[in-house]
Each structure stands twice: as C-alpha cells, then as structure tokens.
Length: 303
Length: 190
Image 1: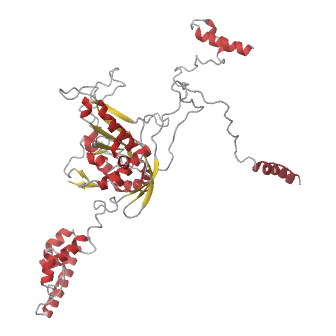
Image 2: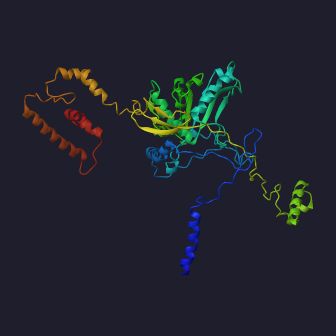
Image 3: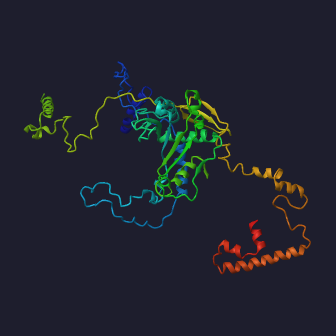
C-alpha cells in the first residue's frame, strides 16, 4: 500500500509538467541588450562558433560501405611468414656522437623510401583518399597579378573552400603560389604565379563526385586517364608515393556546374592540375591508388 | 576579508621579484594566482583566452537535383545555385564507362557491311551461317566421318590415361596442346 502511494505521488507531478515543459533544460534567456561589436563592427558571440558537417557525403559513404572492402580484397597480399628484418646499414653519421644522438641519421646512400615494400595487408590499412590538390599557373600573372583574381574565384567556386570558413582553423582556402627560383626573364622569387587549393574531407569527395559526374563524361575526345605501360618501374618516387596526378584542359573548366552557371563572370578559361593524394605507400603504391580511384568511377586507360 | 587579502597578496608576490622569502612559504601554495603555475613545464598547457570572434563565412552551398541521362537522380550540395540540372552526356551513356554495353554492336555491322557478311550472303545455302559453318555437311562418306570420331575418342582415352596417370594431377595445358593431333587442337580452340 505504501509503495503504491510512493509511486503515485511523483506520477502526478510528471503528468502536470509534461504538457507544459517538454524541453529538458531551461529556455534560452531573453535578449535584453544587443551583442557587443568588435573593431570591425562584427558582433562578438557568447560562445565559440564552429560550423561542422551539415549533411551526409555521398562518396564518403560509398567508400566506407563498398569500396573499402573491395579494395581490401583486390590489394590483399598473403604473407604467411613474418618478413625478413631490414638489412642493417651503417648510419651516415657516428651514432655515438652526442651531436647526432637525437638527430636524423639516415643510412649511407639514403633511406631509399621509394624502394621499401608496402605495409602488410591489414583491414585497418586499406588505401584511403587523403586529399585532393588542385593547382594552376598563369603566365600572365607575372606581369599583372590581378590576372589571378579569375582563377581564385573559379577555385573557390569549384572547391567551396574558404580560409577559416565556419571557424575551422585548418581550412586554408585558396592559396596563392609564388615563385621560388630566379629564372632570367621569367620568374623571380616571391612573384605570384598561380593558385592552389587543398581539399580534405567531405569537400574532397564532393569535388571527386562533380569531376566524375559532370566533367569527365562531357569532355570531348577524352580517352580516359592514360596509364604508363607495364614495363615502367614500380619503385620510382612517382610510382611509390601513392599519388595519382593528371591535368584538365581549359575547355574542361566550363563543364563544372559551379562555373557553368555564370561562365561570363570568369574572363579567361584555364586548365588545372589535379593530384589525388592517397595513403598508399611503398613499391607500386600508385597502382593501388588507381584501384581506389577507379572505385569512384575515374576512368583509366592503357597507353 | 582574509581570503581577499590572500588573493591580493598572491598577485602582489607574482609581480614582485622572486627573491622574496614569502614565496617559499607553504601557505601561498594553495592561493589561486593566474600568473604563477605549479607546473614545472611552464604554462604552455593552459589555453590562452582570446577574444571570441564571429567566424569567417562559409562558401554558400545549395541542394541540386541531378537527373542523369538514364533518368536516375540524386541530390548533392554544390556552390551552383541551380536547383535542377539535367545531364545529356554522363557516365550512364558515355561509351568509356559502358564498354560492355557497346560490345555487341559490331556483330550487326558485320552482317550488313563487312567482309564476313558479304561472304555469308553470297554463300547463303551452304549449311551454316556466320562462324558456325558446318564444313563437313556436304562430305561424301558419312560412315567415314563417324569412324573418324570414334578414332578420336579412342585417342583421347589413351592420351588422358597416359598424362593423368593413376590419380595424379593432369599435366599443364601447354603440354596437352603439344601432344594432341592437329584436328583435336582445332576442335578445342573452336
């Protein structure tokens, strides 16, 4: 009897509150005075604002649902026995010297990173796309740096990246590439030459989807991305670094739907280079990177 | 009151040079002071308070419905402000992505235009069409053909018994090819 009574009492309270207050916390306080403004006239928020991902990414889901398992299967190399330990080579500097004790001390002849075999196949080490870099160079920009404005706006439209956008400190946005060397009559150090942008995360996959759905199928006379022949060595730095690169002609720029919408806004058309940086490393890493990209319907063709 | 005094004293001590003997007193170790840390590694682990600011704006993205040439659709977010885009050339009808779809096209062409088609039209009534011409249909001795088939089967039996052995594995295809007589080889390849 007493137990029933004890149960009944709080029930009544809950029923009384249920209709009135659904929210588990208190309502936001009423705004009595406007936010303070900083030196630029922008309101100073009460909290740190950061814009996170707002929607599912189609190709990212595709990778984690389908491509990853297939790649694991396609690139699997069975190694029943443990690998032989690496040959001990004499380090370049005396390891007993206190100066070189905690410093980089490669073996004599270099560390030969491109000659190293890939990591053993493992489910947590499947090749994954890390970032996509787009870049272009415009010769006219050496004389008139304002020529770079068109490429900057085009890259911003294509990539959707902006510096520090939404409070993300790592979003670098579109960057200007400056000359490094001094070549007589052409380049001087510090002269803006071109534009580049690094894409990571969902924006990277969005760009890849746009490239495959809109640009590559509509390119005229596109034979696919031509691969080098089978006799090419697999331990060169380009073949072992896991990066797949190709270029798009100037006509391809107008095929991006983001550019196509207001093509007149861009005074000049230009080509761009695309680098797909993957996590594949070691001998033959570029082939594994190609296998990954063909999972996203990027077409490759034999030479 | 005493607490307040302790705070002010601590802040004063922080400003004063560290040679003062007061700093060594244990009573000051629990007073909270922002300028002095008990960490031997300094204050690099303490997040510096900066003025909050409104973040930079993001590039606006709009949902866009894409209709492919075969009628399949999907919606993606893009900086293009068009709400619907209809593709006429895409991965569903570009031959580069649909190599398997366009494989059979050449056969019809052959029948109409190419040399094999012309040959078939010219020798239409000769028992066979395209590549399935029965070359032995008009041969004079039917019994001779049957005898040849029997001989072939016998040859096969002997051959397999010799190569496979008693429960052993068959030898590689290359050696089979090398040993087999010419007409069996041609039958296999067809």
